[in-house]
Length: 263
Image (cartoon, rainbow, N blue to C red):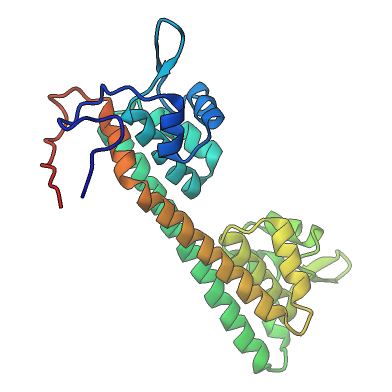
């Protein structure tokens, strides 16, 4: 049988008071975490009785659940800032912000898949090597344009030991042969999929081992799994986020409530 959310009576009223321990139990946070999140603005301030005790409602429970899901999707710092803003934003602005999180997660997934495809292509090339021709080499300007990055980015990768071009001519100009080009493509793919420099350095070091390509594949797979988990966390928070978004509206502005059914 479907019940009403804690803090609501059969008519849907939100005036049934909740203690801090009730909110903690329903939201999955500790009593101290509830107080800390209230202090940081994640949930609205609780009403205080004459003796100083906090009095919460189901709106606080929903806000905490929404925060949990949002934190799983974008991290606690961003979630705290975003939820604080959502509580005072218009429905249009708030809905756009939540949609933006879905879009960012989808973009991260596309980038990780692109990195995975790039790795597969590079592995295919190295499995069927062809003699390197002088015409295969690229200058720093040519390679930067091919990768869609700035020449300064390639110089930074070189400084970090990720890509090692040759030095030619009296001016010590950089020359990127096929091994350096492949390395730069892997670095670009990993950076584009959200990996930091330390993680990329570990991947590039692992490529010199026999299982290097497999380890890189596992890293990208873990990245995709993490993005999927963050997306699920956001989906689970959907109804609670909607309640937070609409809670600031007046009764006349709220969409009509659907009938509750018992089963």
